[in-house]
Length: 212
Ligand code: 5GP
Image 1 (cartoon, helix red, strand yellow):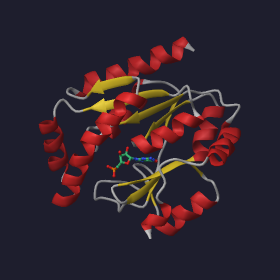
Image 2 (tube, protein in one colour; image 1 turned 90 degrees about the vertical axis):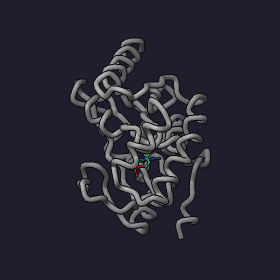
Image 3 (tube, protein in one colour; image 1 turned 180 degrees about the vertical axis):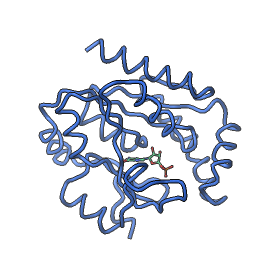
Image 4 (cartoon, protein in one colour; image 1 turned 90 degrees about the horizontal axis):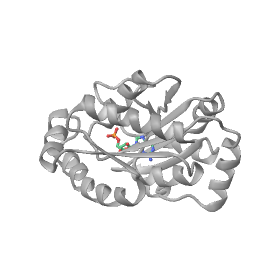
């Protein structure tokens, strides 16, 4: 069933439709990606606390909710059928299958935030980032790196959210994502020290915003 939804790149028409719908926007878009377990969500939440007028997009996903997650806060947890309906109704800005589950960015909230001049942060994977970059060519692209493969493995393990097989898959995928990242992301931030990584992201966003 999941094969039906597999999508890494949208058709030109789909992209044009989304572009038309979000035109007239005033705010900036920031795309934050990085391997699973690198600490992207924590960094993004901290960045939002440090900057004014920022909206952190909440994605929809078909992944099961883990114990510590809150529906509507971390993600909107929905069924595959609901996800497909959102694709059909063109309610998603971008979407991708990641680790066997579907993830997507709701278009309406992003549109609303951009039109009111807010900076929008999208914490999405590399496939989604490629789609979003077509819609927002001037997006600020940040990729978060772990200090080492060993540290990343430990973080995924300590998080304890995945079983061993899933954790291994996430670790294997990290190498591929990092290799792809050098082509697409202008800014690379190493998350060795959380506060420092947050400060670097804040600096990148502030200086990119003042350039335009
Ligand atoms: P996790 O299951 O660890 O929360 O997320 C798995 C991956 O999906 C992460 O790389 C995360 O950035 C990505 N992701 C989360 N939301 C979205 C989204 O809306 N679109 C895309 N393309 N990827 C997402």
